[in-house]
Length: 230
Image (cartoon, rainbow, N blue to C red; front, side, top):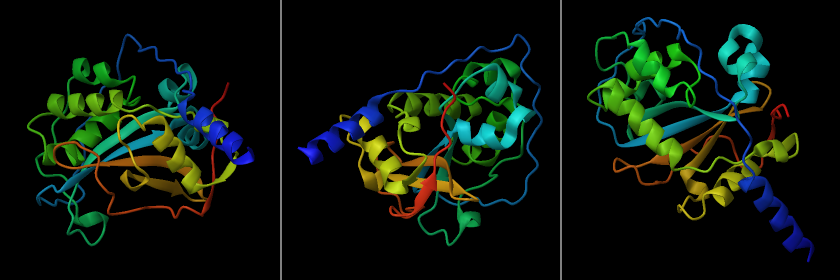
């Protein structure tokens, strides 16, 4: 009975989605082309879909991101969709900066601000990552939106403030069982202080779940979960 109750509690934590608000301002900040800091034009073998935990970002960034951290309330948000190389020996071995940087129109970035709440981040992710695997920024961003809408995002605020990394992975799996998500399809990333930063869902080139070659934070490592303000 105790095991059953614990399982039910985990499922409740997994499927209870955090309420979010998103009001886009009339004027979207102008972006600038990303400075190229290294180019690696190699074939894409699979993808990381990085989903950041906004409360952790805002606890560190504070008022530096007014749209994301003051004017609105977010839980998980999109960091980026990253083409990856199976032969990469380190982070510099993956596809990066494959084309000359280009500035994106504000009319395009504003369409995606409710899932990627930073116009300059949208710009940077396209130039650094998306341009290596997609013909144009709109196609890249639309793919991110499709993947985003295909995932149920768990409210990990219901987890203990200090919890093993596997509990975050299990919350994602429980929320997306019907879609076929497994623990091996998710990599957990933390920042300094073992603060949970983001979940990275792995996809093959047909955008089906695939095993993550980089597992990230070990399952038993205790991580700190910044709760979402209520």
